Image 1 (cartoon, rainbow, N blue to C red):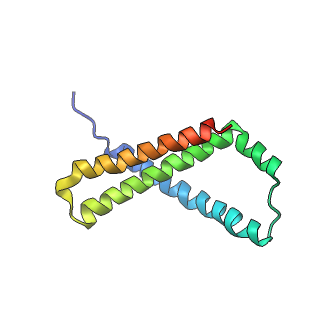
Image 2: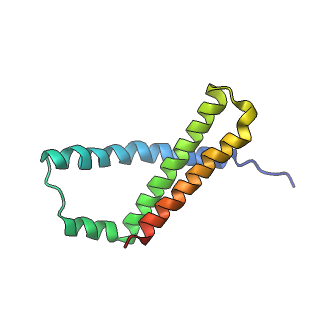
Image 3: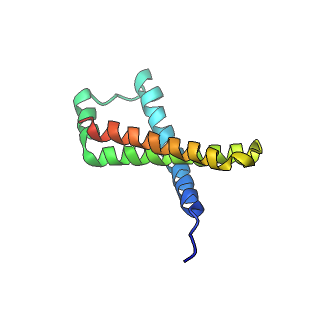
Length: 117
């Protein structure tokens, strides 16, 4: 049996992470970094925000956003080092560091999000 390459799966994670990051992160940054602090919109009270963040679906969505954003970063950074800086001789070490870092960050995000409440 021929060994299947993992590259298409990594490109899938890259594209999904890029799309979700481009859609959700700017909206969250605008709301919690600009609109609420400047008083353009009334911020949710603590009880409401705790109830929303305490819901399991919200935690899974935030975990998915964190995981996909980390894998998007890992794939982009790997290709920047591999092709941009011409470090082809370190391909295995770069891949291990990038995707290992994404996996470690995903594990930390999962622990923090799923065990917080």
